Length: 287
Image (cartoon, rainbow, N blue to C red; front, side, top):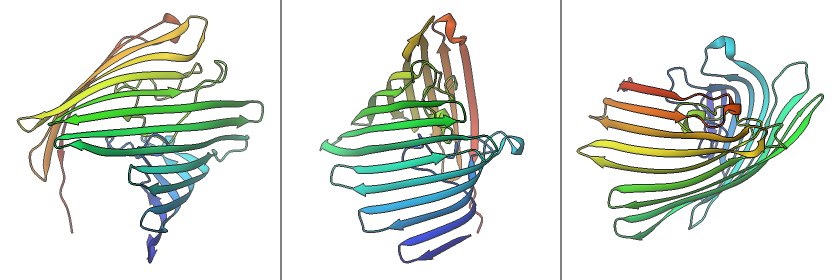
């Protein structure tokens, strides 16, 4: 159910929630059973530039069917402000699984993302994000940091991207965690790092994409390493991801993507992995 009054809306019940670039809260939308949440969500446009959002989640409906859903007591806060150079977001995501044992993952951060047209046919897109996280249980307490930097240059239909993402570690014992994210969007399509290793993860990546004869073409290369090395664990390998996709009309689209992961140090317990996806999508609006 959704209620609205002026520039404020309240949604109650099962719903899709996405925040910023999906790195911390997303819907995993490419899955057939996408991620949703049960709870209450309040959005308010305080001014034309300033917006605030709060959600309380009582259940995380994950992508692995009902037996993997999680009862929760999560609080999500996100405030954003639009400037002439881009949007600034500040957030606090306080996550807790609703069970007898003490647990919690509290994340506080800020993100800036924007774009600027340099000349006709040339646009720069840029983003920077910094966050800190504390994970607590009855017996342990860990702290880790997060840093992400990205720069895109779109020139006459060709886009090149350079990115750096660091999911920090607490002395090799805990890796920065994003349990509500659209994880498949980050750190390679073979899904080797849906959960961050205890050593943390540094992902340095470069990509190029364009359109040719109506087809979208893209290639991305990732180089993975540990944030804090431990015995036998430093190099987490690399991955090459390839995409071909086409939208035929408002109803039909199709695509193919392929991920090739090459394992690094033996101590990471990773193995060479190839994954491929082929899809056909039909979207019909029923009114």
